[in-house]
Image (tube, rainbow, N blue to C red; front, top):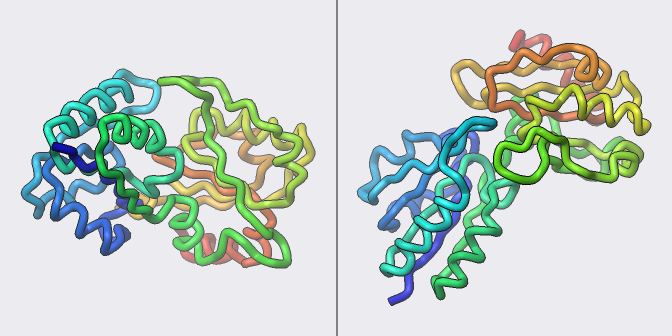
Length: 248
């Protein structure tokens, strides 16, 4: 008897999940949900719900334990849904879970969601891309490989800085000063506009306009989770003025 593995991106809040994601929740036997998944999504479903969230830089549920739990339920023929905050395909370690599901001979379905970079720019009233100033987006993580890593990733920082593309930094709260400094040392102008988006779509949401230089020089006061966006597109879209006018 084969089980089914479904990864669902829940978006930054409950009302940004897709219709397909809601339908998948309604048919699941088991829901393994993350720390950033909006728990209001779980209130109306009948599936067994198991919290498997991780807390950055602290002890928590390891990915190895999640993988073992997933495999055990799939071996029982269960329909297991992994509810992830944001988009299930960006920095969610879903690739590892897909591999586990396929090894178990389970059916696999992936339901994408709204990623926090898109949500941040939508809340600020702008776009991640602009054909005149940013023809693409680079998504990077703020820490290296491994559970609890405090090192910044090994990227071609010079190429990133020279790309002229919008840079979205996920999970970078602890290392944002070093990341911004690294980008500046590799060619990004310190006056490049930046946006700090803290606690997106929550009651204590805070959007703060700044520059790459300010990220490198000042301590960022965020509750977290936070995402950082750096790029000229912020200035061209008038986003900074919009955020300041709203007083967020």
